[in-house]
Structures are given as structure tokens and as C-alpha cells.
Image (tube, rainbow over all chains, first blue to last red):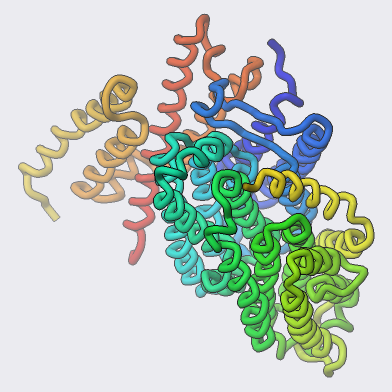
Length: 498
Length: 138
């Protein structure tokens, strides 16, 4: 038999970054490791794109690791939803890679740069693994791979407080992972299976006899994954982690890590439990909606009062994750489309914003708002991108953020809950305040000392920022790839619900 | 500082048996309790015991820092490489059945290589952790 690339795409999606991470660990020089990481990351969107294309043409792909058929062996299962998330994660990472070289060289000591790239690739391996696997325990293993490497990435920040932030996340993340594995253990007790599709098919018949352990499993899984995706009020690890991690790590994690956790959440809710038991009767959706609305408001208000811009965007991320879980909580076609498309759009917008801040740190040496008067005039292109992505966060028509909020509002209206629509708009106005505050300082204040010496960063840092900002506008008008595919994924998920 | 004679001789006497037991656990893993992880921990335990008795410098002569640091990714590379070998020979990732003349022997060889990789990474990581802690406060 011959080696056939197309047939093995699901394995290659995970194996290539894993090999890359291992090879990067042998390297000494940061620049060589960066080259390796760029090549590996550059291949990822090609593979993910190939998978998405195959899925759209011929339906779900099932890949049996080691040749053992499911449910005994580990199955990689690609459908529209996870092919979409795979493409998002890998494409955003690939766009960001050119930015990494200077930013990492600036913020991380020379002898640690190669291990930074090794950890980055390992994190990417874990994130892609969680997304592609169809096995609940295998997802836990990849969750740990991505989490452990994330702790290292955060701890590599210049500020010594990065160590504390990483430790805080280590504790919270470990609790989350433990809860997840307890939940999987309970499911295994009830159904005797770890394969997600198999669990879903066995859970329905088992629910008559073992209803209570199933509810407890759902509770453990929900809390565990919610810790990972930083659902309010389980978000406390996130602001410090994002604020003190190296700029590239922050941008990468903000754009991908929480998104993958959200994906896992959707998978558990709709592909495992939703098929077997009625989510309505468990009232989980209402709890989720309440927490999401709290996140949208409270985290946004916290962002308004934050002086460190990285922390401000981190709180904004908590709020934006609230919108995504809001869509999940609505649990109808338009709502889930809105959640899934916001997962995509938010990755682009927050990626652009955090990269822009990385460029500000590179040029001006600070991200404290008070020290950045007039920076917008000094770094015109960077801040043009910042403003465009910021408008996306607010949800201005013509940007990607508007598309997501439009679907979320439609989802709320479909259920006749018009007050929720009002809440979406009202919380968006708070985003206007915190983004507007930055714009005011950056453009209308006297030029500060730090801003005086700043200018737009070199092209290899600038291009990724601009690409993501342009994408924010592009996906505000052409929604075939974003909302179109999200709607297809939502249709499949909602269609399976009991 | 001169340490107790009985301890020093006793530890030196123990070391080969510790290593032998590690190898037993390694190769017996498919039949009884054990495997690469446990064997790796025991192997690292041998280095750590030696370091406690004779000092970290002496331990670094038998297990140099650079070697230990290379062992950490090397084991993963062996593991992943074994999986990729199956891939290149036309089967799925981690399918070992094509590694030898017939599937059972291929799987045996595959598991052997994977466990070897685990041994190398685990013992390397444990020793590297020990070195990292022993260097603190110097």
C-alpha cells in the first residue's frame, strides 16, 4: 500500500505540529525555531482547508488511529463544525506567525526563544487535537497538552508577575481538567464508552435508569470546560494570564485557546447530551444565558475601568465569550449560528487588537493607557487596525462583529425574548466606552514621552495586524465562509437535538 | 564532608540492581504491571539517589545536563516517529502491524519502540526536574 496524503489529513493535522514541537525542542537558536514553527503553522490551514472541503463535499470523515475501529480505538471525527474551528485556529495562527519573530526576540531572552516556539507548537497540537478528536478521553489528553504548554507560555512573560499569573491559571486549569475527567468518568460508568458518538447513542437508553449520574456528569463537564473557556464567574485566571504573557502568546491564546474550549462545550452540549436528554428540561440553557448576560455587562464595565490595555482587552474577551455562550444558551438555529460565527469573528478581531498592542509594546515600551497619549498619530497604521477591530468588538455595521450580534438578536427574537435583544445592544454600548476611551487618548491627547519615540512597526509585524483588521471588515460583508458554514454546523447540531 | 561508609558502599551496591529492576519493569510491562513510565521513574530515581549521596556534580558526570535535556524531546520523537512509520508504510497513524513480517510481531515491535520512547522522556524529564530544583538557591 502507498502513503496517501488526502486519506491521512486528519492525523497529519495533529502529527505535524507535534513533530514540529519536538524538533524545535532540539534547537538552540530562536530564529531557526521560528522558521520551523512558521513552516509547520503554514501547513496547518492547508490541511484544515482540505478537511473542510472534503467534509462539505462528502460528509463527516472518520479516521481510526492505529487502525482500530471505534468505539474501541480512538477515532478522529471531522464534521462541518470542527473543520470550521480547525480552519479558524490554524489560519489565525498562520497569519500571526510573521509577527512572532521580532516580538518574541524583543520580549524573551535569547536562550529561551527556541523553547518558546516548541511550547507554542505543542499548544497548537493540543488545540487542534481537542478539535479533531471524536474521543472524550483523548480530548482530555489534548486539553492537558494545550494547558500545560499554555502555562509555560504565560510564565515566559517579561514581568515577574507572569509567574504568579501562570500559577493561578495552573491551579484553575487543573481544577477544570479534573472536573472534565470526572464528568467523562461518570459517562463511562453509565455508558461503558469513551467515543463521543457512541456515548451519545447509549446515553438515551441509559438515561431512564441512570438519570442522576448523567445530570452530575453534565454538571462536572459544564463547570470544567467553563473554567477553560473563562465563562463568567470562572474567568478570574484570564485577565492576569493575558496581561503578563508575552504579546504573541496573548494574541495566539486569545484568538484560539478559548475558542477551542467553546467548541468542546458545544460538542458536549449538542453532540453528546443534547441528543440523549432534553436540555430544556434540565434548565442548563437558562443558567448559561444568565451567566452570559452577566459576563457581557460586568466584564465590559471592568474593562472600562482598566488602565493596562492588555488587561482591558482581556476583560473584553471575557465579555465577548459571554456573547458566544449566549448563542449556545439560546440553543436554536439563529442563536447557535450567532455563537459559532462570533467564535470565528472574535478570534479575528481580538487577534488584531492584541497584535496591535504587541506592536505598541515593541515600539513604545508600555501598554498603560495613561502613558500613551497621541500614540495613534505616531503609529497611524497600527491604530487604524486597532480602531477597525475595535469597531468590530462594538458591533458596528460593516464589521464582522455586527454579523454575529445580528444572528444572536435573531436567535433571541425567535424565542420571543425581546428584552435579550435590548441587553445585547446595551452591552455593546459599554464596549463603545472602553474602545472609545483608547481612541480618545491615542488621537486627541498631547503626545506623551513614550509615544514620542514610537512609530509603526516593521512590515513583518504590521502585515499580520492589517490582514486581521481587513478580515474583520471583509467578514462584515461577505459571510459565505463565516456565517454560511456556521449556519450549516448549527443546522446539524440543532437537527440532532431531542 | 565524608559521608558514612556503609551508606556510600550500600548505595553503590544498590545502583546496578535499581537499573536492572527498571529494565525488568520496562520489558515486563506487556505481561505484568509496569511499562515505560514506571521504568523511567525508577531510572531517574537511580540518578537522584546517586546525586543525593555523592552530590549533583558527580551525578552530572554520569548523566550530563545536556544529555538529559536532549532525552526529553528524543523520547517523544521516537514515539511519534514510530507512529509516522506506520503512516508512511500505508497504514493509519500508530498502526504498527506493518512494522514487521506479520501483524502480531509488528505490533510487538511498535509497542517496544513506543515504550522505549516513554522511558527516555520520563527519565530525562524527572532528572531534568531534579537538576533544576537542585540548582535553585546556589
